[in-house]
Length: 355
Image 1: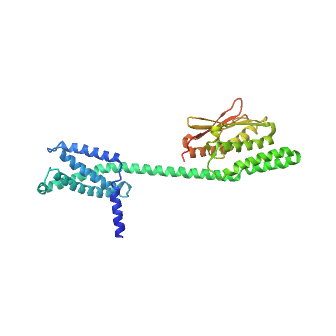
Image 2: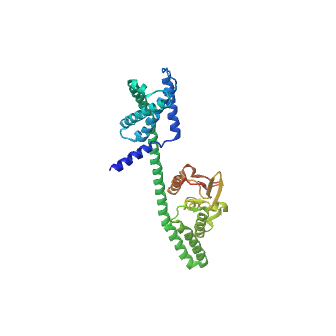
């Protein structure tokens, strides 16, 4: 028990030296200002109040940093103890320094003991007031850091929850889409075997692109484009001339990392809310550009266009939440009218994530 207590004391004393150089400079400047104020009514040379205040100020600052009263439940009592110890240490150092430099002698201090005690008392009072200002600032800083830490943890948990929801969605791999596609394959096997073979090839390509992403947190734009291409090829066979599509992904952008399933979600949204409800169907174009450190992934359609309040669906809301969780304000999703009709959805992703 004694060893543990001694170790804790040594650790606490060592922690008093862990201080930023900016704070050391600030303490020095404050001490110097106090020295200048005291020298106005002091007939002695400026070196006398300067040494007194600097030794007391740094000694008090050292013990205040050891005890850290801004982290205590009883900061005033802890501060009083730290200032008392600092004042006594400062007195000893002050006496030793002034004797060493020849300003005073031991006999002088013996003769003026009452004055030294009185001066030490007022030094402690001033040190307590100045330290109180410091620890008030430190408590506010400590509280701000604690709030920031809580906010960072909240964002991290929110990001994990969103990614967990994504992985669950990935694991399901759109069963309705798969069942409908398999039903179409079964029908085409009986009516048009060559078309059935083509649809089965597209379905195989879709599954090859989708299944590896179930456990991944990131993929590339090229892989996502292959997934979207296979998905659109299957739907094109089901919808016939009502659906046309183009993939315009530059090779240099195909290797960029993006969150999985986001591009496919935009394509699905364009099909469900744009092309499918339109009497004449429409065309979907998937493209990507890059500028100013960000990549812009665009899914445009010539379907029925914006109806009601655009961008309020669950799918688009999930995309916005994931972008914000992963990239902050740098990640965003925007919708705008396509001319002469349709919608342009643009997903902006910065080059570097905030992971």
